[in-house]
Structure formats: structure tokens, C-alpha cells
Length: 136
Length: 400
Image 1 (cartoon, rainbow over the protein chains, first blue to last red):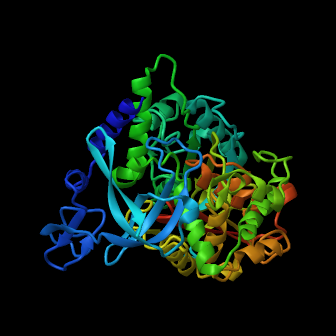
Image 2: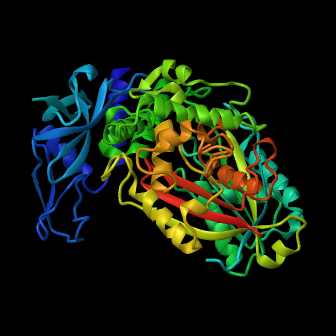
Image 3: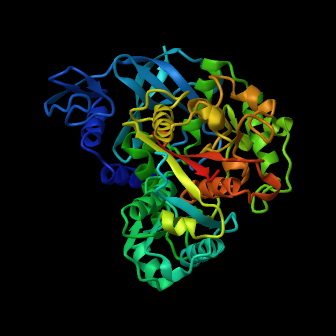
């Protein structure tokens, strides 16, 4: 069953890819937590894109995202159609970038708003690696 | 806009049911025919039909409206199917109004329908196909950045929104519970409300299952199947009808460049609502204090609180107190969701903006029966898509 879900997820991520997600996940699988930075205005976008959503420039480069961020909000999926059974989901605020939805690798009860977290990698099968965050 | 260019002449809704009760063609036909009867307009006078897809997460609905028009047997000068998540019904109405104002179509019908997604496997469907279909739907709706994290519904987003709202304003779980309780009270006056006949207390909300903290089950609306339609007419048609028409007074719309959490900047107050409301109030030349009634697209108790504040009905962080004191119910400053709202009327997402519009139409025509807001003259309808990433607001008035 897990193999079926993993395979379906990998196909769905490819089918629903946008101009940045394929490269984002390729880099994540190589242990690089990166997004695109505009060569014109310097803005780092998340999600990544092959252009700058701020100034519209077409020249961007891949650059490291901050490895640490602050917990902006978090909850727990108690009952849902869960493919990967993440117990805790959160929005992590990366300075200068914005909010990133991720799995939080800690018990719900141990977390508090504003807490500092650090990124880690989460291989989920089917060749897919996601990111997750842990309390520092 | 105080120009009276387009009006609502009548409307109808179907029964709301947990599972689909009719096929999508019959579901829409029934509300379209009933809306025309309500307006007193023969079906042969309809020139434009705008609909939503019959739900967002089911099977392919490509060319739905083409088959629907053939099924109805209606020759039309304008035919469209419009979709943008929760605003779909408002978008169908917007298109119908455009067609009326263009002068080509004096009578237009806007209809929305939603058939509840059946998450079980279908007859003959293999396990592989079933998993594939559900995984693809999830990643399609929530995108390649959020979808893989196992979201089965938008509830976690709204739970995080509620958490931020509570942290930033000091609102309590009891404030959220009041939002649900007062909607349940309103629903007792609506003969087609899903939760008519079932009362709810603050204690019961707080004791209901914790789905995604801080949201309990009773803080969430129930997806249901159902449909609604309204008839939109030009001034010369409106003035010839037996009932006082309800005129469009103002419009506002704003789409923040975000989708659910991707690109979102604020979970405790929504730029799309504030900006769409600002435009609509300016267009109508009225303010929130002038409203008698409002129907808002609050799918969670926390969103009801936030929406009331972003629409300017109550100060920041004060909706909970206003709800508890009855200031958003009959006898209060403005009656918000007299229908019972999404939480207690029921929430067929694609049809919801038209259900809201129908409620405001009935209120402004004095036809809302047991839940009538006495003397209602001016009403607002709000619809949203994503996690409030985009909003549409319309303001309606009846003849003096």
C-alpha cells in the first residue's frame, strides 16, 4: 500500500509540476534546500519560479534558503486522508523569504509559536525527498 | 454604482443532502425551473445561462454546461461554465450580470451545484486507480509544494489561521464556539438547513472532537450536495415584475497572488477580503454601518470572526464579543448569516455564493419567513477561494 501511495505521489508531483517544483525537489533530493533568487532585484521567492514574481525579470539563480526559521503556526492532522502520516504540520517563517508549509518533526505539545526550527530532509519513497523542520 | 442597471428577480435552492440525491443535470434543472417560477418569468425568455461545474473534486466535468443546455432544451444567446474554487457561484452570477448589462440578454440565470465528493472506491475501481485518483486530486488542489505533505482537506490551513488569529487578538476557544452556536440558532429558522432541529451549545462545541487544533469538529462546516440559482434581469424586466426587484448596488473583487499557504502573508486577517470590501463599499457609496444583513463565506468558526472584522462589521478582535452579545443576530446592528451560514445551513461549495445571494434576495424582499430581518434594505454577499486568497463582494438594495 505504501509503495502504491509513494508511486502515485511521485507521478502526481510530476504531473502537477510548475516551472520551479521539478528542480526544487531534484535539489532537495541532493540535500540542497534552495529556491530562486532574482538577479535583477535580489528577491528570493518561495515557491521557486524561473522568473521573478516581484519585478518580472527573467533572470534568476538557485540559492540556499535559510536553514533556520521561526514557527509561525502549527496544527496536527488528527483525522484526514493521510498519505504520509505527518502528525504535525506547520508554517515556518524564513527571514526574507516568507512562509513555507512543512512537516514539523516534534510532538504537537512540545511546540510554541515563534520557536526556532532547523530544516532536515525527509525521504518518503518513490525517489521523493521532502523537507521537515525540527526544534533547534 | 447607484445606477440601477441590473437586478435579481427571483431564486431557488435545492434540498441540501449529505450525499448526492439527484444527478447533476436534474439537480440544476430543478433549481433553474424553480428560480424562474419564483421570478414569474417564462423559461423561453432566458437568453443567458451561467453555471459552475457540479463540484470541484469529482470526475471530469468538461463540457458540462453544453450537455446541460441540451438537456434543458433551451436555445441560448450566452452559455458559460465558470470555476474558481469557492467563488465559482459568485463568478457565474458575475457573468450573468455582465450579459444583462451588455444589453444582449435581458434575462439571465446563474446556477451553481456541488455534488459531494465520494472518497470511496467506485464499483470496479482497482486499489491502484483509487489511490492514484485521490493522490492526484490532493496534489492538484494544494499544489506540488503543499500537496505532498498529506493534506486531505483544507482544515489544517484554517486551524493555523485560527491559531494566529487567537494569538494576535486574544480571542478564545469560547469566542470561536459562539460563532458556531449563533449560526446554529439562525439555522432553526431555515426550513432547508442541514442542522435544523439540532441545537448546539458552547459546551458541546468545546467537547466535540478536536479535528485539527484549535478547531473542533463543530467549528467546521459540512460539505454537502446541493444547488442554487438566481434570475438576473435588466431594469425594464425588473420593473414589470410583481415583486420589488433587488438591485445591484456595488461590486468588489481582489485576488492576492497566493494559493492556500503558497505566497500567503497573513493568516489572521485576509488582504483579499479587506480590499474587495473596500472596493465594493466605495462602488456602492455605503459603509459597513449601513448594512442590514450580510452573508459571508465563513467555512470555519474562526473565519466567521475574521471575516466580520475584515469586512469592517466589528473592530479587530471583537467579533466574538459581538456574537455573544447578539449584535450580529436579529435586533443587532447587522445580521450576519441569517440563513445559518456555512456551518449550519450546509456548504455545497460551488453553490454556496448563490445560496448566500438567495438569502440576501429573500431578506431584501421581505420573504425570509421566521428568520426575516425586519425592514432589511441593504445587504452584502461575500465569497472566497483558496484560503481566502481571493474574495468577491457584492452589495444589494431593494427599492425604497
